[in-house]
Image 1 (cartoon, rainbow, N blue to C red):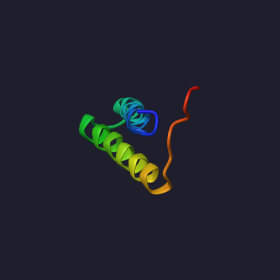
Image 2: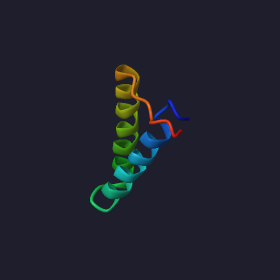
Image 3: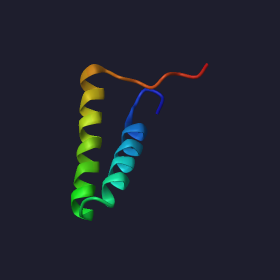
Image 4: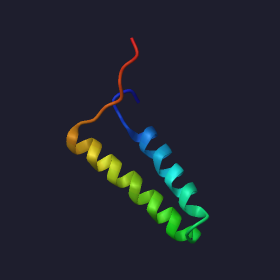
Length: 55
């Protein structure tokens, strides 16, 4: 998982979902969170982002 951004994208999407939860409906919040994850993953794949390696 050092090269992939899956875990970070999932955590950010969950954070966005939880922040939207009190302002929007649960379904809308989940859709925004899922969209955030998909956008981050696509950006990471396109720009070849990777997590820093601990030496």
